[in-house]
Amino acid sequence: MKHREHNGFNKYPLRQELLQAIGSKGFIEPTPVQSEVLGHGTLTGDLIVRAKTGSGKTLAFLLPIFSDERMISRIPNVIIVSPTRELAMQISREALWLSGNLNCTCATLVGGMEISGQIRDLRRGSSLVIGTPGRILDHIRRGTLSTDSVHTVILDEGDHMLDMGFREELEGILDAARNREKTWLFSATMPDSVRKLSRRYLKNPELISLVNEGQQHSEISHTVYTVPRKRKLEGLVNVLLWENSSRALIFCHTRAETMQVAHRLVDEGFRAACLHGDMSQRERNQALSQFASGRVAYLVATNVAARGLDVPDVEHVLQFGLPSDTETFIHRSGRTGRAGKVGHNILLLNQFDAEKLRIMLRGTGIHITWLPVPDSSVIHDKQRSLFEQKIFSQKAKDNQQIKAWAADLIARADVLDLVSGLLSLSGNSLQTGYALQKELQRESDLRKNTNRASQISKTSERRRPRRQRGTAVRLGISNPAEWNTGRVLKTVCTSLKVSRQEVAEIVLKPDHIMVGLLPSALEKYHLYPENLSQAGLLQQKTTNRQPRGNKR
Ligand code: ADP
Ligand code: MG
Image (cartoon, rainbow, N blue to C red; front, top):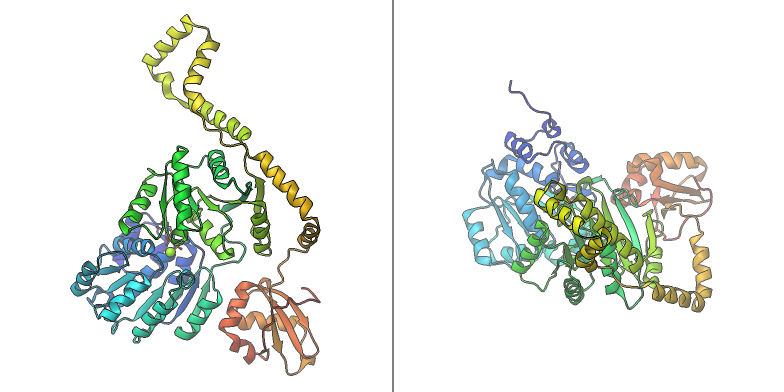
């Protein structure tokens, strides 16, 4: 028998051609989401997979797809829908190397590209179709994409697609693919919109969840730098100098803001470019490839880039201003710390927005370091020491010509004069940023004085216990005497398939029970409410009130 190298993918029933492709790519172990999906067994039904960004979801769905014998046909079998053009093309690239040894063809249908080429690809026959919602639906309506034989539809980044307003397109695609056997929904978060869609289009979905709310990305550090209100751009310059990042993704709110920020950075001598939806597809691809190759160190983007893009080694994500919600915060920060690497998520906020963020993230367990923006004096010191490190690490010692020149200079001049002369030539150009500390202090004093009353209430709010209570659900019981907290806990855990840690508290009332469920358990409660009813805990109207009383 042929000797097989150790590869964690070998234990799954994958085609030899796929194992070869994975081996040549150098992947040795499946990521947790890949093990969960591949180890799931037959994978014949609907599926909801929750996993954080950068966890390897693409392969998790491509591998089972390519293992299906039907994939060699020339008619569309599988549709993968993805929120952005870049992400769709990224999935296509992944599909390409993975299926290199298979006789299987793929069409990429994204907006902003010539439709004629796409029609040609479809006519030639493609079993796998990858694209953005609008363009896929466009092809379905034109009759250029036939959905009769589509047996699988995969919605990648489902939450983001709904955020972006693609609900109608998604429904259009799902309605058109009426012969489908499987619908797989990948989503990092499960807001109501996603849940609604899944209730309508998925049948008894299996849930695979690798998301532990509040614990996302322990390998990402989060720092908030407060900046004076009207000096945000100067603050950004200071932070970039201080962090000395070789590759950072900077998020802005609007297209105009990305351009303003990118121009300012270029003026300040940084290698920066912008990425937003008003740019042509060619310009967007160019900006991305410059960023990926390192020619551009700072990519200033709108949320278009916030999802799915996999640019290796983004050291820093910088959020310029307050993210609109916790989910945006998490997805943006998910652009760094990919594939297990360490990453830094930095937010630049004025003090008012910093307070808003504090409130927004309360109870999520995300740990943030709060700091005033680095001031020019500390940046000066840091730049100086970086410059000195550069001098010391120069390999000039081995350069005989330079050494001879240096010896000659030392013989002819005073060493102090000599070094000073050299430093004023090269070291004088060090960037030291802007002096912002006084203004920040002034704003902070002003805020304290004018806002003392609300400050006091905020402080007392902060002292509240941080422990998560979960969301209260109200469960009816027919015979209260038969229930105690232990039995409720056991029943909830077994019916919903959750662990004890996911049940925050249980409060027994004369005629009903309040159970505090952490987000992961709440998810399952919404998916399988009937499991609880069967066990004697009847679903009643959910309240948003936090339960109080006998804490566990
Ligand atoms: P997600 O869709 O969950 O955000 P991706 O599928 O884009 O994540 O994967 C993130 C990165 O990890 C990609 O560069 C991918 O090539 C790499 N990757 C995926 N699976 C593995 C693996 N088993 N071993 C090593 N790297 C992997
Ligand atoms: Mg992805």
